[in-house]
Amino acid sequence: MVEQNCENCNFRVKYDNNPKSFLGRLWHWHATWCPGWKSYMKSLSDVERIKLAEHYKLKK
Image (tube, rainbow, N blue to C red):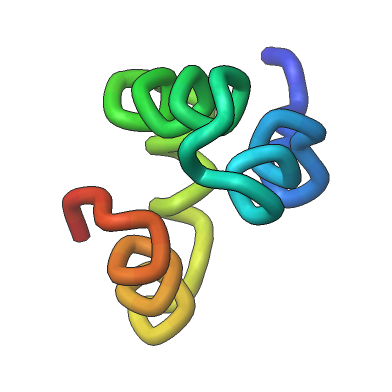
């Protein structure tokens, strides 16, 4: 299995810097269905997961 690098994703940085940019919107759309992002979120503690989900406006 390939290790996910979601914590240091360059596209995620693009979203953080400018959520309305093309790459920022692409990352946000991708994060809604990406199996790697889902497994990354499951690997986090409940507090961290909820904080990230609220920050990125994604399902908790």
